[in-house]
Image 1 (tube, rainbow, N blue to C red):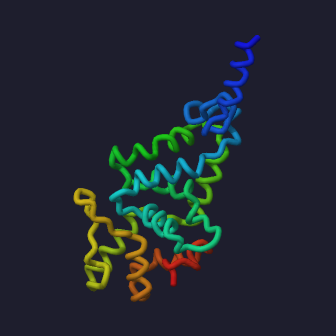
Image 2: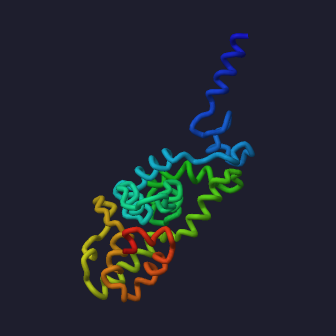
Image 3: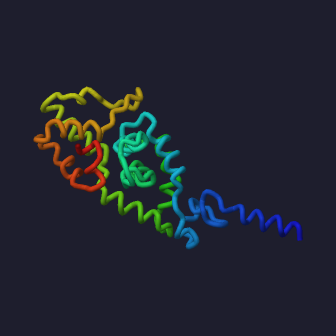
Length: 202
C-alpha cells in the first residue's frame, strides 16, 4: 500500500518541464498527449544565449535588442520561441556547437509531431518576415561596395568572436540613405506591423 502511494506521488511529480504527465514530448512528439505542449520560454532563452554567443546572426541581433528592452510592448519579434525557430532555420547557424542549442526544438518539431505549438510558431515566423543573415549581409556588402558608410567597417568574424549585428547595421545604412536599391528588403520589412515601431525602421 505504501509502495503504491509512493509510486502515485512520483507519477504526479513527473509533470516536468516537458509539461505533459508521464511523457517527454521532446523524445516522443508524435504522441497525442503532446498536442497542447508549449515549448518553455526559459528553454528558448537558454538556447538563444548558447547559440548567440559570438554569433552575428539576424535572430541574435533581434534577441539582443529585445533583451535590452529596446522594442516595447507585446511584439512577436521578441517572442523567444519564434526567435529560436528563426535562429535554428538560419543557414548561418550551421556550426555544430551552435546547433546544439537547436536540438530540443528541432526534435520537438520533427516530422509527424503532434505539438501544435510548432505549427503556431512556424506560421508567425514567416508572417513577420525575419530574414536570413545571408540575405541581409549580401545587401550590406553591396551597399558598402558602392559607397563606404558608417557601419561598413564592421566585419563579423566567428573565429575571433567579433560580432556585427547585421539587421541593425543594414537598417542604419538604409535609414541614412533610403535611396539605395539594396534597401528593398528594408522597405518591405518596415511595412510589417511588428517592425514599424522598432529602431530598425525609424
